[in-house]
Structure formats: structure tokens, C-alpha cells
Image (cartoon, rainbow, N blue to C red):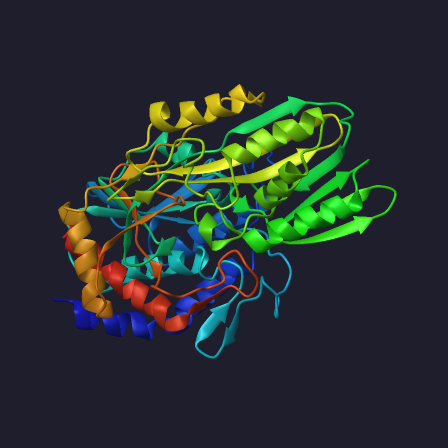
Length: 461
């Protein structure tokens, strides 16, 4: 009924929308040192304050919850819909063609850290609420824009909200992609370790910088090993795996494996340098304690096994797909070896059929294993009228097929009942989220605002 009015209103607000996004982009809201006043550092709090200021300027009542999270309400009715967005960002990193904290317009795109994750989508949601309010469209229920400041570092902001305020009946977060994500795999990331001082052949190992990323480089330093034997082993493993090796002979032998990085939720998109290095090391058949231990580990996590087949936890289901598992981090300093594994679990995985076998497998070959924290899979019934409404609105505005998706990663609504990810990135679009030159098409920001406004009306009318 209100489609034309909403579309015209959002289009008329284009310059204001871009202005408000630019205000948020200008704040480098990377998590900093916690203080009594700022739980996640001064800059995320500053971005939160700015976002709440923008909400108030547009006529919404706001609440600041301990400088950690805040919200803006559409009205004082019963809370039906929550929209969760966040004002914090990941570090800018290298490789930008412009200042990451100055929003620039390049053709049809806006560029800057946070344009797609999640400051641009947040403003799209705010203007959706503003469109409904300014057009005088009647609602019987309340919609609340919840604005966090710690999504990128574990969502430590959400407990501040949920310890004091009610959970919305339904929630969506514009912090992912369209059409809609209703299934998020569970996750656990066990850390294993062993003390081995002064190994006869291995001086050091270093690979991986994050548990949730397949490593693209692995470094190994060896002593008292034949260089020719190492080179031959590297050539054989490289031929099988596609990982390349550099062998540097100095006082000792340094081996560098060069693979391809990938997110741990999609490990098949990379080429794991660490598992290739362990395969090469195993083929040397060195007679030392750590060498034998790592050979046993290589059998549990052979190169190319991204589904936990060798360790006996592989499984899949029609709803959420296959389990993924990757060995992502390892460091040995001459005294202690520490490693990490990342596992994304489909909805049929449990502690009994996945976590326990993984931990016991590592213990049986000689590792100590820290009790891993298990994040349960997240599932929202696709038959809910709420889900059908969101997909219907998406189809109406885009002309694209609306369907539910399952992902290996986690979103801002992972632990929220009846919470899904909905927008703002269209299918097959890479906005360089978390990378250099992050961008968002202006037309997609405007379209998302129209979709969200329509959804608000349908859900809260």
C-alpha cells in the first residue's frame, strides 16, 4: 500500500543518508583499551554516541546502556521487532586508495571502513524507521534499532542489553547479505599444546595469525637434516597439494610453505600451508619426539581434509550442509608447541558426536587440550510468518528469488531467539568487507532502506 510513498521518500533523503553515513565513517571505532567508562575503548563508544545523536536528531527516543550499546525506539508500543546493527569496525589494514575514515564517493559507490559493515546498513535501517514515522504510517507495535559497539570482537556488548531489556519477539541484523540467513553453524576452536624442549631436529614452527583463518604461510626451522632430502620432500608434497616451498640453507634449514588464505568457515577456498608443511615433515620420517608427534597429528588432519573425516567427525545435514574443520594456528618456540583448530558444526552436530571425539583424538596422540567453548548452531524455522514476510518484501523490491541460507560464520543474532541476518549485501557482490577499499553501492543502501521500511510496516502494522 505504501510502496510508492516509501520509495519516493527514501530517494529524497539520499544526500542526508550519505551525510549521516559519512559522520559515522569518520570515527575509527576499532576496539581499544577498556576503561571504567568505556567497556570496549573510547572510539567504539564515540561512534555509539554519534549514532544515538543521529537517531535523536531524526526524532527518535534513545537509550544509552553503559556506553556499551544503545537503542532508538519507533514508539512506546509492545516491542515486536528488533534491528541489530553495530558501530564498531575492524582495523583499517593496508592497501587503501583513499583515507579509510573519510567516506568518498567513486561513481555509484561509497568507500570507507564501515560502509558495508555495518555503518551504512545501520543508517539504512534508521532511515527506514524515519520513512515510516515521517509518512505517518500507523503501527500497532514498536520497532527498536539496537546499536552495539563490540560486534567485531565477540559481541560482548549484547549482554549489557539483554541483562536489562527484553528480547524482541523477532529480530534481524542488516550485517550480512540478502536474501536471508536463518541457519548459522555451531563452532568450537580447541587449543592443544605439548611441552617438548630442545627437540633433536625441530627448532621452531610458526603458522597462522587467527584461529578463524586458513593460514597461507607456514615456517619451519630444522637442524641436522639433509638439505637434499628436505628439497625432495617439498617437491613431492608441492606436486600433490599445490602448496609451494622455499628451502633456505644457512646455519640451519628454514622451510617456508606458501599456500592460500581463506576464512575458516570456507576452508576449501584456501590451500592450507600448515597442513602441507606437516605432510612434508612427516615424509622426512625424522627420529625425534616432536617430529613423531606432528606426524601423528598430520594423520588426524591430512592436507585437504576440510570435513574432519580422518578424525572421525565428518557429518552433514540437508539444512546446514557439511561440517568444516581446519588446523589454522601452530607455534613452537623450542620449548612448547601450541596449536588451534577451527570447527564449524551443522545443526545435527553435538558435543557427543563432534567435540568429544576431537578432544579425545588429540589427547590420544599426546597433546593436552584446553576445554573448548562450544557455540551451539543457530536455527530459525523458515516457515515462520516473520521469515516469509522478509523474503516476500525482498522479492518485491529486488525481483530476485527470496530463499533462506545457511552459513558457517556467525552473525550478530547468533544467540538471539527468532533472530536472522537480512541484508544489506546483494548476492554475488564482494564489498571488500574487512579488507582495503571497503565499499557499498549507493543504490543498494537506498534499496535496503526501502526493504526495511516495508518489512517494518508488514511486521508491526
